[in-house]
View 1 (cartoon, rainbow, N blue to C red):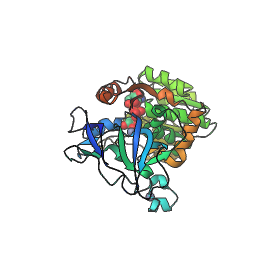
View 2: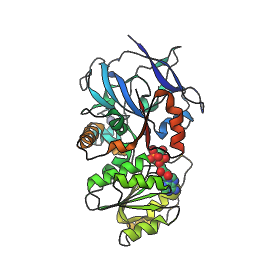
View 3: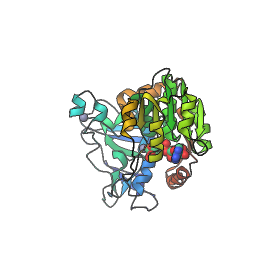
View 4: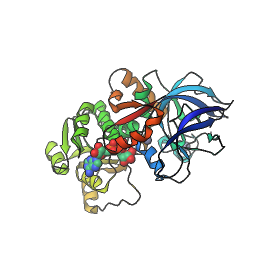
Length: 360
Ligand code: APR
Ligand code: ZN
Ligand code: ZN
């Protein structure tokens, strides 16, 4: 029986989001209905509401979520009703060129639910990142559910997007390993997750760069050994000074702006790696001297979803959280309800929170 539940929908470009009735169909073949327990508020939700992703309104927002599988459709064997899962927006196909090359993190054919959740008048909803989780129950592809050990859903749901992106940018894409020096530009949820990743991987020095002292205080909690407020000092000079004049082995850019990307570029050591995880708007350009790209060696990389494999990374990170080795609680700035998403966007804009988490 299709169910009618409350969900947060962006009806039209720029309009404040609304809590409305949504009809969730029974799961079809390869699908699952999940009772959402918690879902973090991410910049991408706001980008959808502002029309910055595409114009397929109305959008059902929310995509950093954990919950319990309620029902599964035909042919689903990886998850079962009662399983505690984290949702992901890259359910790999297993058959495409990337999957066959053994690089499923670059899968070209990631899948979502085929059936649609609708408004009560039958209007089809576009779920944010193919998930849509500011809602009591959501319909997803079963491959979007990763079973993990029991844990606080508010904390571990954040692994579904921003925290995984930052952690993976440092560890998976950047390949930070013990003894490395790491510099991170931008200490929001993503940058601080990169810092936490570097800390767990054994980086010997972790330099946090931001223009906001509050963020730098948070960065210290996640493992930053040194902090640089780049509104007062040249961060490239500061990073070189802190690394014996060289620069960092791995530099993560978690802002998505040309000026910080350029700083990150010059802050890397010989043979160092620069990882872009901050999302630039399409109009942004950088100009870099080829001789510096050539002469310093190393790699300029970008990181999409932290090059994660949910089936590998989510259970591992939940275990580390449960063991007290990865402080996901520190990302949860506040717990709110479905009706508070709009005010959470305001707090995000003002830089007051790492993550607001909707509890259901
Ligand atoms: N130099 C250094 N830090 C900066 C600068 C700058 N010029 N401009 C902004 N920042 C800092 C902000 O003060 C903030 O702490 O970058 C941080 C960005 O953090 P959030 O806004 O909380 O964003 P976050 O969720 O961490 O995402 C970071 O990744 O997912 C994308 O769209 C997202 O591009 C954004 C990035
Ligand atoms: Zn694939
Ligand atoms: Zn997100």
